[in-house]
Image (tube, rainbow, N blue to C red; front, side, top):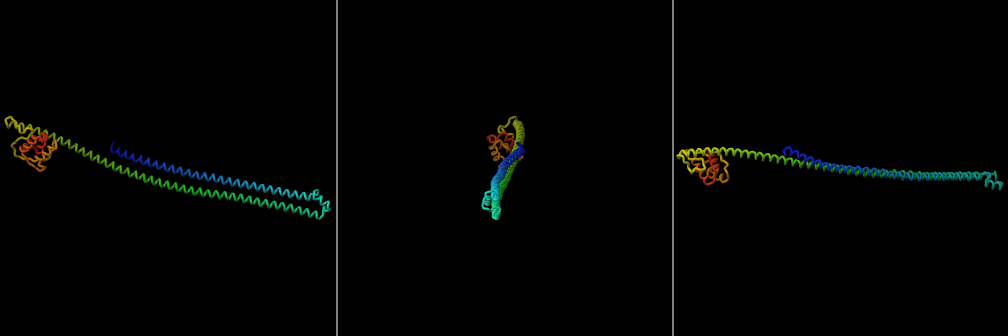
Length: 337
């Protein structure tokens, strides 16, 4: 996976986590909004139904009182008819009262007129009394209707106040819940953002470390390849010098090489020129390195040898199994022999 793909994967994980978190909070907010709306609608429906009950109760009382008014009106009308009938019967010239007065010789007398007037007054008083009773009853019934209407208004007003109070309480609860939930959502998103920033920084550090490690490996491998190239050159140089030394040895001894120099290419050249090492080569193993440091390189101090001196030391190490033929060549090359 490339560096860009790793960053993209982390960003996709971040967005997925944020989306899941926001969806959860949005579901909570939507559920709360639905509940609040349903509750408000329930309050409105309840108020409408309760007002309908109040109206029905008021209508019932109003109808009942109107019926009472109609009954009182009929009572009055009946009483008025009765009083008129009683008066007409009293003044009827053919009625019982006229017959009594005629027997007593009082017909058309002053007494007769006086009794007729008294009957008239009685009829008027009776009608007036019935009228007064009717008006009092109507007033009582109208007052009952007004009281029912007033009670209806009072009930509706009281209910409206109660509903308003509950609606305000629900609105406040909804506001507090929404505010708290949104604040929690914001804090959670900030926390997730901080967490993924930390992950991003960690990923960045890991990538940089991986790059540094890869570069170190590349440099090491390049150094190893270069060292192998140097070793190959040194081996070739050793081979050439070895062949040359064999040739020189054969020529100087009449064709017979010295057995004391087997394994090294450094023979007695008769030269007294001394060299010191220009570098410390990488030898075949730890024993060879330790031997060379102790016997040739003197722990890093500059040491000068003639070719014959170095050849003798190397021959001893080779014969003792401390260094290999390749090690001999590398050490000789480090002294430019």
